[in-house]
Image (cartoon, rainbow, N blue to C red; front, top):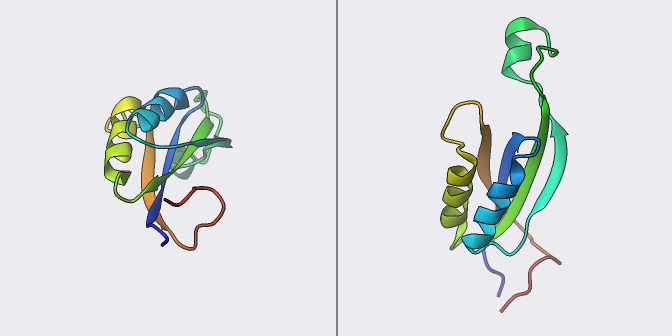
Length: 106
């Protein structure tokens, strides 16, 4: 039987992913993937300038969870990254359909 899984995605400043990953593991996640990224967003839309002396390098953290622990893992990551504070990063959850090859079924 295939379980329901979710994908938690968090985008944070470069070098700030480790506390989120630690929190995810502590909350029951089995693994994480970190991608380097570069952000362009609100500042460009407002000013037209992406070089404002602000570091645009980011890390994208991806965590697949059993849907039964998604909220626990997500909340732990938000707290660890202080993502409730504006400008610290952002996150979201997506349902995973047709998973294969990454988690062992019970």
